[in-house]
Image 1: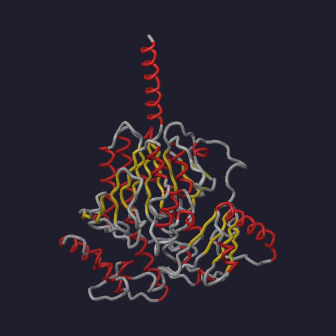
Image 2: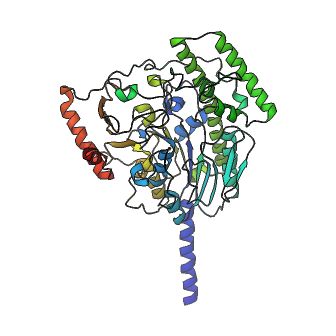
Image 3: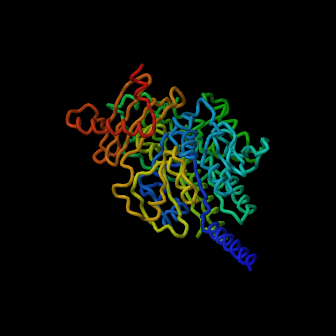
Length: 516
């Protein structure tokens, strides 16, 4: 009888564990590169439609106040995977250093919690991934056409096709062979929409008849913003936005600092495909040069070429997200799967006359974030609390029922996703720190604080400039209010809040600067 009772007890425990296992949600985390909210129709005012992304937002939540901790690809990924700011995870910029894969990361903690972990696509942290049961990554930035992949045995091979399709294919293939008795977290990391925006062949002619509206700040002259005047990410500049590499305006024999790299990327194609590519873009080049653009007209023409190819790459991305979502839907997985779509940062689509990212200004600091929630999470529609990419790690751990280590600096979004009231309980400010200078695009090092209404930025290193913005009355950040007597009290409050955030996150940069 005692033996029977023991067996019943063991069976009960096993049943409870199995029930818990089925209740813990799977997580599919889709991250793109340089895809900005301005190019997602669910955020409104987008010049292109993204129906598959829109459906995720319509069936779940869309974050209006989503930001990064460091607007640069590698550092942003390090913040996401550790739940810590750059100075704590050690990967501050793309130009120097290697991500320390031996440190505590969210995938390792998810493994310890019993989750299968897999990563497909862009890694961009120099060292090889750790904490994953399976990974297959693009080396460095990766290529759009016939991309190389590195596998877990350390070998590199070439896949034939378009990168966005291949990353999706590989993600679905992993889902097909996973251990269905255990929950999983799958990281789907696309190269799109990174420069130089090489489109899928089927999308060559898409958007070619579309004229994109100029952003209202397109002709910004950056008065009162010294760091903005000294950047190298201007569409107007022949050095910054290369006609061949960025706009595909190129004839054999043209020379610029990026033509060799552009040719290398196209030459990855098979001969027949290469011929098709050159035929199409040769016709674009011929028409472009026949118009003899100069001055402002040339700047606007470059903007149109940039926007058209970026939009084409976005179209393929949206379709592939739809394909992955359809797999989850067809296999009955959506009810118990959190689907997250985001980018590693925002991007400039001509705002302030720029492309690229890096700055703490809104277009690059802000990043899209939409989620389709599993059963049991009630929140729907817009989420207006301020969130940051250091919050993803604790959120996933919380949903997995795993402990959140005390040194993780982000906050779990689970209370927001469950629809709990957060008045007076949620953060009222965000901290940002950008380190990569001197480097490509030459954006000065800076750190700062953003509240719901105000932003204070300090540019440092080879300069010492402060900027203050009233985001309510100046959402485009055109008027630097720093030092104006009218805003002295608000300025002092923000300085104090900034010091408190730096103390909370253990970033002693101001103390370092004072010691110089």
